Amino acid sequence: MELDVDGRPVRLSNPDKVYFPEKGYTKRDVAEYFLSVGGGITRALLDRPTTLQRFVDGVEGEFFYQKRAPKNVPDWIPTTRISFPSGRHADEICPAGLAAVLWAANLGTLTFHPWPVRNTDTDHPDELRIDLDPQPGTDYADAVEAAHELRSVLEDHGLRGWPKTSGGRGIHVFVPLVPEWTFTEVRRSAIAVGRELERRMPDRVTTAWWKEERGERIFVDYNQTARDRTIASAYSVRPFPHAPVSAPLRWEEIDDAEPRDFDIRTMPQRYAKVGDVHAEMDQHAFGLDLLLELAERDEREHGHGDLPYPPEYPKMPGEPKRVQPSRARAEDEPEGEAPDDGPEADG
Image 1 (cartoon, helix red, strand yellow):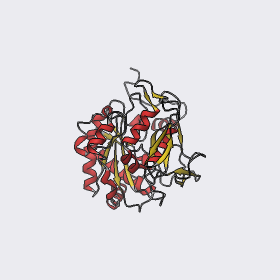
Image 2 (cartoon, helix red, strand yellow):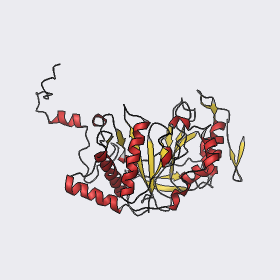
Image 3 (tube, helix red, strand yellow):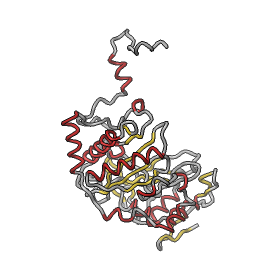
Image 4 (cartoon, rainbow, N blue to C red):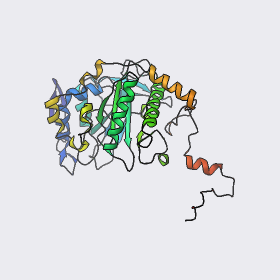
């Protein structure tokens, strides 16, 4: 079938192919969903280098991330060259309109992963993205508590955030920025936010990179701000059986929201009623000076420097040892001696 998307014809092959077997939702259903929230997802992706998470056989099949623009990308979809931490480069698509979203949906794209930069400047992020990730033993309600305190942390440093569901159990909060800071500085700011939140909610929040140290707390995933790390866009469809979406929310809505309530059937109804509740986000742009001052104070007064990068990254200046704590302790034990686990170790 062929869709008319803002006057541009976009082909949709195999429209009746089932993508969500539990619900019976098809490729056509996904395409119609994106059309219904067109203004919102276009805003979220506009002019951003974007990785496509493709599910050509639906959510029960294999998936892959398409970082490089496919060879058959139409000439009306712009591409932009981005640089990876390894030093390599790739040309990624930069959606300039809804037709690009539907073109990608025809390729099996459910989730869009835009970089926090625009194609006019790929080295300076224009968004600070905070990912509140529930760990085992915690859920969305715990993320909500952390999000409210995060809002206070941001406001105390002259910033305003816009929350959305992750599409799973977590919450994402985006802060629009003046694009004047490097990825390293933005990541450092995210770490400062996480540490301040951790100080305010030590039993509820953690910045511990290693899972064995997190406990039943909300993890502030600061590495989602590292170069080449991305967060699912607003209005993206997430690959779970019930076809949930990442739903933009107002702050006063997060307590009563249920992430499962936002899916490809219900979000069009909400969008028709309230529109894109994050529409004004691009009208704002904040600075990171106060957060960078907080980071400097953390290091000066508490000795809190950098935190580990993801394993695939090259070793970064000032980064601590990138090794699992329990493994590091085992390596430090004298050969032939077992670690002393205390008097109850035998029991």
